[in-house]
Length: 495
Ligand code: AMP
Image 1 (tube, protein in one colour):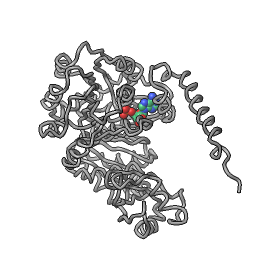
Image 2 (image 1 turned 90 degrees about the vertical axis):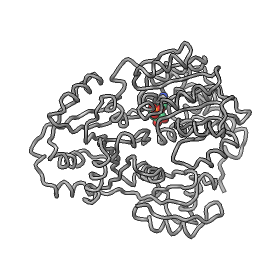
Image 3 (image 1 turned 45 degrees about the horizontal axis):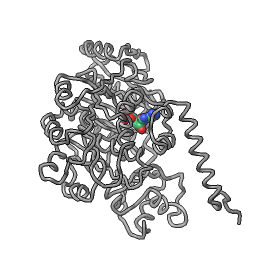
Image 4 (image 1 turned 45 degrees about the vertical axis):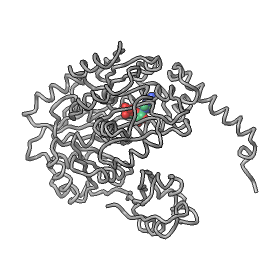
C-alpha cells in the first residue's frame, strides 16, 4: 500500500514542519507582527490564525504592554483589543506553577466567555495553559474547585470574582496583570464598587490595563487612583471604528416598521442577521411575529437563563437560526464571525451604542451592511451618530417595491435555515473533542457524510453539533445508539 512518506520519516517531517514555521516567520517579517518582540511560539500561532497585519490598537498597545507599563486604551468591539492585551500576557506567562497570573474583568458572561476563547486560541501552543471563566449564572462550587486545582488566567465578571475573593476561594497574591475590558460598560452595569474593591485587593506591583470605548470622568478618576504613569492609546480616526460597513437609513413610521423590516430582510439576502431593539418586550414580540410567519428567528434578552442563552447563541453561530433579535445588554459580547447584516429596529439612545452594534458586521476584511430604521422625530439621534462616525448615513429610497403586501414578503422570507442543532449530554468534562463527535457521526460507525456536519461546539458539560436538516433524525439516532469515547451520551434535536 502506498503510504505517506513524510509521515513515515521523522527527519522529513521535522524539515517540513521547520519549513512551515520559517514560511510563517518570513510572512510575518513582511507584516508588522514580526516587528514585535514576541516569542516565535506566539508569532507562529498568530500566523496559524491568519492574522496578517496588526490592528491599530494592537500596534500601539502591544509594545507598551510588553514593557510592563500601565495602559489606558480606547477600544471598540472588533478592534482586536483582546489579542492586544492577551499576547503580552501570554508572552510573560510563567507556566511553571499553576497559580493565578492574570485577571481580566468583563461586563458580561458572554464577553467573558468570548475573551477566554480568544485567549485559549492564542495560547494553543502553551501546553497546560488553564484559562477559567468566573462569571455569574454558573455554579459557584464548580468554579471554586477549578480555582483550587489552579489556573493561570481568570476571565470574569466583577461581582462573581468578588464573591470568590470574599469566600477566599480565589487568591490574588501571585497576580501580575489585571485588565478591565470594556470598563465603561462595567460602570453602566453598576460594577463600580466591585471593580474598585478588586483593584484594591491586588498586589501593588501588578500591571493595570484599562480598555474602554469612552472615557467618562469615573474612568479617568479610577485611572488616576489605580494606575501609575499610564500610557494613553487612542485611535484617532473615527472611521476606523466601523471598518468597511455600508450604513443605510430607512425613514419609516411606527405603524409601518414591521412591514419595512420584512421588506429589508427580504431585499437584503443574508446568512446571519442581528436585529437590535431597545426593549425586551419588542424583542419578544418581533421574534414571535417573525417565527410564526415561518422565518428562522430566535432571540436573547436579559430574562433568559444562562443555559438558554448558550443554546440560542450556539444555534445562531452554527446557522441553525438565521436571524437573532436582541437587546443591547443581552447582545454584549456576541461572538459571531460571519454576521452579514445588522438591523437597528430601534435606534439606540446613544451614538456610541450605534457604533458598538454595527461593529459586529464587516469583520475580517469583509464588507458589512448595517441598516437603521428611523422616524422623523429621531433626526437628532441621526445627527449625533453622523457626528461620531464622521460620515453620513446613506438614505434608502422608498420606491414602488415597498408597496408589496405582507403575504408576498412573508413568502420571500420563508427560506428556512439549512442546519439543525443536536445537543449531546457530554462536553469538555468528559474529554470530548470535536473529532470524537465527527467520528461518531461519519465513517463506518455513523454512516453520515462529513459534508452534512457543520460547526461542533464543546462546552463544559454539553456539546452542540450542527447537521443538515435532511439527515438530522438519522444523526440523532446514530448518536443515541453509538458511543463517544467509549461511553453513551444522550442526543436530542434543539428546536
Ligand atoms: P476583538 O476586538 O478582540 O473582539 O477581536 C475581533 C476579531 O478580530 C476576533 O475574532 C479576533 O480573532 C480577530 N483579530 C484580532 N486581531 C486580528 C488581526 N491582527 N488580524 C485579523 N484578525 C484579528
